[in-house]
Length: 431
Image (cartoon, rainbow, N blue to C red; front, side):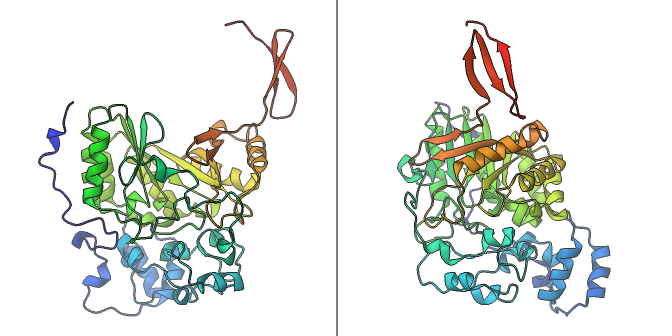
């Protein structure tokens, strides 16, 4: 078997993956400034005109910055590590931005260990201060319903832990593996499939040694042609760490494609830097699957991040989870998927919400998902209609679900129902 001799000169990361670790080249500007000063809105507006970062600073972000981080500069706000270091991780901090509802207060007063709270300042700027039912807010702020377990729910509903030949690697399909690169996300979605492990450094701690074990397994398994880097969120790793992983994996002869699953462009668009783009471009072909939930995520910052990635030659697809009261109406989904196409992101999957513990308040009926596809097909561009899938509990993999367009056969012809409900006949032949 061919070995990866071409990677001998590759620098091994000196430390285990630490998304909050400091890289001097990425250190927030204000931490390098001896004297920070409080800036007025007028001064911020002047500074904004001078700002020339890769990702624009929208008026909404600027106002939020002035109101809540008066000592920070536009350059700080646009630095992804500043965003991580200033993320909202406690109820006390969150109350500075939102008027918390009773279910939210109750959830955050629980002593039970659960999915941590983490919201980037950027994403916090998109949340409604007063409305606890705002879709964006419901996605990231815990509520007491998370502690109610419904029948059929499980900490690991997809059976990933039982299909893991080495730590941090899931081998479910014959030719593909899921590589869990980190347990950290910049913002935690409350319906996360891997809530059992993300943010839990005691139960799930990733190291370079663990990465190397996973890479060795891929190298020794010729049937693997497709590697999906996920987590956590791989784009919270340092550029040097991403480069290490991609270089090692790409050097394996039988690996044909590498994908990255991320929500970073929607919750931390500032992470899309020229240095990151250079790293990703170096390892083409490379595919990016971005987790989008609601059209309100399609801000000037997110649009710029996606367009920069597309300009770097990275094909972009979206993965959306169907969520009750958040995006489970056709018009919301149409606005999301059509908006994604405008920023060169192809809607790929619409997922039925996985039955993780405490997910009952998020899950719709499966029929609702089928109705969503029926409401989209024929009423928008085909590119804007994703595959609706259920990731089968117990490790059965993704199973697509469609409205009943095929009605059977009659007199040697197949009977088809179109998007309007009208029946048509197609002259079939015997194969």
